[in-house]
Amino acid sequence: LAADSCNCLPHTVRERYIYTASRAPTHRGGQSPASDLHHPCSSSRPVSLSRAPPAVQLGNGPLSGSRKRSLRANFEKEREMCIQMFEQWSETEQLEFVEHLISRMCHYQHGHINSYLKPMLQRDFITALPARGLDHIAENILSFLDARSLCSAELVCREWQRVISEGMLWKKLIERMVRTDPLWRGLSERHQWEKYLFKNRTNEVPPNSYYHSLYPKIIQDIETIEANWRCGRHNLQRIQCRSENSKGVYCLQYDDDKIISGLRDNSIKIWDKHTLECLKILTGHTGSVLCLQYDDRVIVTGSSDSTVRVWDVSSGEVLNTLIHHNEAVLHLRFCNGLMVTCSKDRSIAVWDMASATDISLRRVLVGHRAAVNVVDFDDKYIVSASGDRTIKVWSTSTCEFVRTLNGHKRGIACLQYRDRLVVSGSSDNTIRLWDIECGACLRVLEGHEELVRCIRFDNKRIVSGAYDGKIKVWDLQAALDPRAPASTLCLRTLVEHSGRVFRLQFDEFQIISSSHDDTILIWDFLNVSPNGQTEGRSPSRTYTYISR
Image (cartoon, rainbow, N blue to C red; front, side):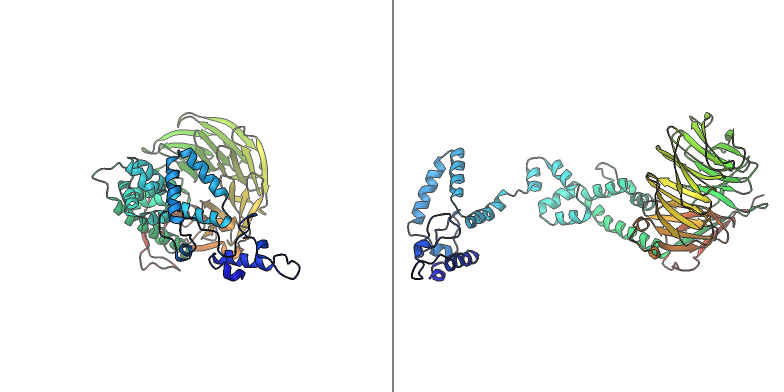
């Protein structure tokens, strides 16, 4: 009887209804009178078994067949009367009535009303804003989307596609990536599509479709570069310095136009990065040039003659000579009016650098028990490493000692410091990663067979060079993950130098290294020929400079 009487209810409600009827209390004689059965959606009112509660028509649209059969004959007439009366009320009165009406409905009816209201409450604001003259707001909202979301937004409707096209949102997305990602910035400079960026709408700027088609090409270039790094695919260019008296390139720095190198023969040579020709030779040191750094104005060099010299980067003229250290100046760094030098005499000198000719000694830091081989610093810390196997941390502002990092088993030859991370290389043939704030060693990298002489890192990689003549590329993010197996950390080993690797620098596209073999190598991971070899020795262009 219960099953027959509730066929008009939805399936789930009908199941609950039958379940309620089957569990209703039994009166004497084993019978369950109809008056004891209650609809599961109601609170206290008995439900007649002859028909289900009348469904509520929420609009003027057609009803489904099952709901239409359940309506009383007078429903249409009564509904029209209610609507006419409803329309005569104020908005406040209408809300009061609807709230009261909804409160008297069951849960199933609430769900049905919710489904009916959902699409009515949604608004296509991207289409609505331009209609009110607010195109710039719609463009600004969509400009925060990433590439995948922007592709999807173009497919929503023609109006969304128009807003994206006229707002040049693909151009803005590429500009945002170029501003925030050095890899994108480098590609824009090398492929020369930067000339179409960061310009207002003019006749010189291509349409949005150009940037839409450019984006996947950039992604493909990035994936190719990453694959080249992983697989070791590169084009190799070689500068052979071939000094007559002594061989070896101890230090270097480069930019897009030039490479400046410090040599064992006491000279500083400036090379054209495109033609690889020697542009200028600076002489003045009476010992090997062991370290250097330059900016737009000056070159600062340190030598085994115990002096620091400051040169004009354009003319090559000596502007200043600093005589302080008692033995060879092994490393130096300068930035924002501060310079730090270190020496074989076990000391660290901190200098105030107002200008090229106005450099004064601020403080001498003493604490290492052997030659201080390398220094690095930022606004917070000065970090030094020594042959005494320790790394020491000093306050940049006060020059006071902060802490010592212990762990290497032999002297430390190189390090780099950035943010909280210090990466160091040692004559124990290992590389260590440190948290500078707590002094903890985060990881030990093993693989070099001799002293690790130079090391650099960025957000993705660590690149190291050693006296075994090898350059190794390591996965930095994996190295910082304690769960990563040690066997997965070294991505590639590059072997081209025939002597000890003294110094290297790298960016997203290349490594430039120097060696005791008197060469400078440029490892290019961007412009790789289709026939470039992934293993073994790469095809190379060789340029030779013979001093006279």
